[in-house]
Image 1: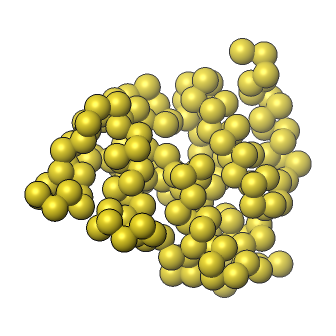
Image 2: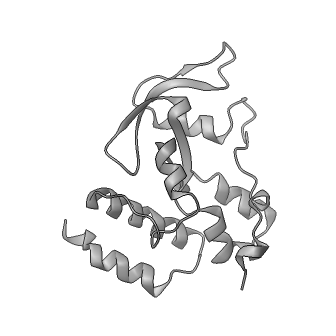
Length: 163
C-alpha cells in the first residue's frame, strides 16, 4: 500500500496539450465549459482571458479566467494512495487530464479543498455536496480506485437519492 511519503505530484503529468493546438488541458476545460464564447489574452488563442463559468462546488458564476482554478475532484494525492501508485505513467497522465475528474471552481475554494477528500471537505449546500460525491464515485469507479466504507456511509447520510 502506498504512503503519503511516497507521493510526488510530478508522477502525474497534467496540463498537457494533447492535440498540439497550444491550448493545454486547463484552457480546453475553460473553453468547453464556458456558457459564452471565451476571449483570449493574445491573438494566438492559447490562453483564455474571460468567459462565463458555473462553479462546481458553490452557487457562483465566474467570468475572469484568472479567478478560476481547475480542480481534480479526486485529488492526485488521494488517487495515489488508493491505487494510482501501481499505474503506468501514461495512465497517471490520463487521470490527471481526464475531463470527468476536472471541474471549474473559484481559486479560493480550491485552496480550501486542496488534496482533501470527500471525508475532509464538502460544499455547504447539499445539492452541490451530492453532485460532488456522485462525481467522486464516477471517477473512482472509472479508474478502479478503492472506495472506503466511510465514503459510502457519508454519501448515504446525505440522502442524495431522496432529493
